[in-house]
Amino acid sequence: MKKLHILGLTVLLLLVSLLPTHAEKPIPDTVTMGMYITSIHDIDFRQNEYTVNLWLWINYKKREFDFQQNLEVPQAKSFTKLYATIDSSSGTYNLMMKLQCIMKDSWRITNFPFDRQRLRISFENSQFDTRSMVFAIDTAGKHFDPHFTLRGWNIDSFALTTGTKVYETSFGDTSLDKPRTEYSSYRSTIGIRRDASELFWKMFLGMYVSFLISYICFYIHADNIDSRFGLSVGALFAAIGNKYIIDSSLPETTTFTLVDALHGLTLFFILLVITASAYSLKLVKENKFRESMRFDMITAQFLLALYILINVILITRARG
Image (cartoon, rainbow, N blue to C red; front, top):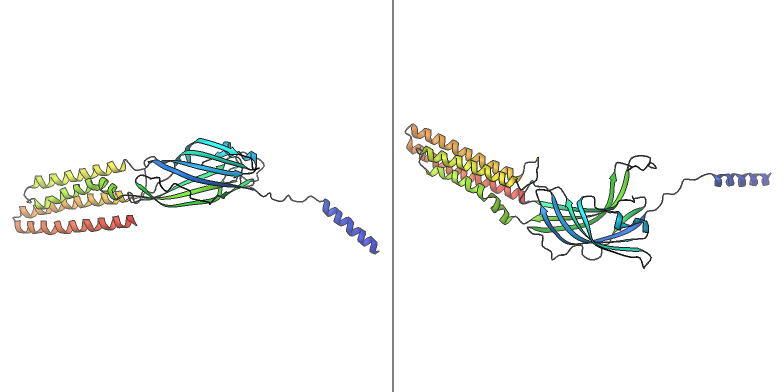
């Protein structure tokens, strides 16, 4: 009886061993990537573009990864391989290439010209997803040339990370259960801050001169109505023209920016000057010359102080 029991148990174990088992999830290969940026230039703020030259090196084991053909830069408008060489003498593939990429990015212009931007560059393999390979970072040494100058900008930070880019499509792969694919991504983020001290005055000097032209009206006698209103209306159109010139160099945006705030403030204060001039003229018509002069002087100092104070608050907040 005992032998039959042992025999039955043996047969049961044999049957279980013959049953199909679920295949283990394959472990993806690790691809080590490093980069070194030699220059960033041709920043086109209007078109949301910039050009970057960089060296890229990739170490991988499987020949089919073929990064010379399969390298993808998702955010690039275009990229050119200026140089490429590969060494496989050590049993692994060590690819070195130099790229020039014209990158598309979205600028944050709320605080322009005191803005801070992040330049993002990412790399993927266009043929192999996370089931086959994942990226690792070569952290040795520096990753950008500290001596190259980014005209008008200062580099605040530089970070390298890896992650997963999800695409809600199967790209025609019928073996997938759902239309979703994941690709390993190697990413760099460069934080830059605009050197805006001189640029600010270059762009807004015309606007401030417009306000001062209208402000001079308070020192012209109220009965010279043509002179006072002529200066104010001329200042109004000058401020509007200055805003259109600045807007022509900026990308389209639906947000209310510092440029909009400062020009809107200036237009509003010019309107207040015109309104004050009209009231001062009314006092003159009523033969209240002393009251008219007193009103002009008090209003002039109050509006100037308030205008300067609001400007300081807006600019300080934008500089962060």
